[in-house]
Amino acid sequence: MKKYSVNSVFLAVALCFAALLPAGALAAKEVQSPVTELTMEELFGTPSSDPHTLAMRAYVWGMPMVEWAKVRSYQTRPDNPWVERPAHNVGAPINHFGRARVLYGPDSKDGVGVNNDTLYTNVWFDLEAGPFVVETPDFKGRYYTFTVYQGDTSSAESLGHRTHGSQMPPLFVYGENFTGEVPEGLVPVRGNTRYILLSGRILVDGSEEDLARAHALQDQVRSRTFHAWQAGVEKEPPVTWQRALLPSSVDSEDELAFFHMLGSVLQDWLIQPEEAELVASLAAIGLTPETGFDPAQLSPADLDTLRRGLADARVLVDYHSHRLGVGSGGWTTNYSGGFFGNDYLLRAAVAKDQIGVSVPEEAVYPIGRVDSTGEPLTGEHQYRIRLAGDNLPPVKGFWSVTLYDDDGILVDNPINRYAIGDRTIGLVTAENGDIVIALQREEPTEAGVNWLPTPEGPFYLMMRLYIAEEAVLDGTWTPPPIERINSNY
Image (cartoon, one colour):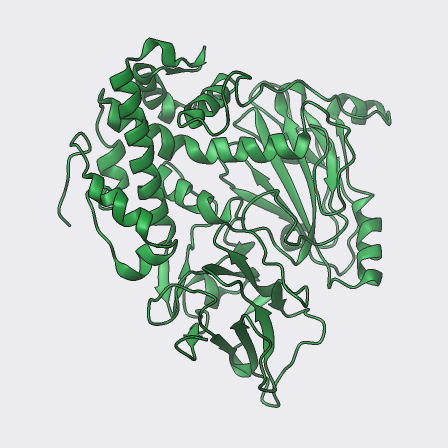
């Protein structure tokens, strides 16, 4: 691969190509440019004071943190934490569990790539107010999991059915300000950022009867401060103050709004040793943990450079989001899950379309943006996915295939079906056990297929493989190809 200096002036033509192609087309057309050819090592490998480079680094490093902070703000509603929320919304005041009572649908805007298989039961913790104790009921034979997400979207542990059977011991959730010993009998959950998310998923089949049974389980999930738990007091945890993501004087459509939001996140960030040099270098473009983002100290030329760096970084992240992991039959599979380490480019690429993935032992998420020939998926065509009866997804939890529009939102359709999986009501299975998924705008006329309606424009697929067996984890089993069966409508 030819190498390019990050400090060079990138061609505007690269951005023009990216703007003209629909999302997903980069993966199919293999458009290359000095921006898209940058590697993680080339972008972050050496110290730099160049504003363009620093702007790109700020976005690639900080975008997941900003997007996660947006989700936290949306779900906890700092300005009105006790506001009534719709049934699909999993939001609640900070440090309190929110409980989605229905499966996510097209009206759900909590995040991109949400699932249509489980009821979410989430809590955002402000660890400055902790430690906390989380208690859960006996889920009997029902699949459940609680994944721990740090403030940068990374995840190193997912607890639940896989790790503890039908009932977990209480969780002891704490941050860097806790210096005591974890009490005996409690499972330690450590946060290395001020805010962390504990995201619970409880499997349902979507029927009213099953939802009601799941609600009863959700109601038994609770959080208390360690002191209240220790004293045996039924006292609700505090609702702590949260910093605004944007100053009131800055519009969310402002070209530099991202830097303002990153500046807000930085002021609450617990800087890890491996990040210290990078964070210190961002002061040259007005970003510091002490004051956030201060554009007043930058010249008009510097601000223009920041805008260009931001645009280039978005192209880079978009490009890499289409080539996550190993490709096969139109699917790409990231086998690292939420383990990002210091690979900021991988972290940003995952955050773009599937923010909040679990650890691979808990779930693997193949993504389909192109068909088996490499052409972008679009509602202009019809597709088939054939899951062979003797080679169905090897999982111990569940599997599903969910369809999203190009923005990562579930697609409104006349049959209210957003995913097909092993629990789909009315699932059609052939005599030999094959399951055929028909992806198209109009209802299929052929018998023996399961219709998953598509939008008119671009879309993508996400397969979920929960508690995948070794054949998935080692790459022996891969999803069947996404085959286009016609040219156009």
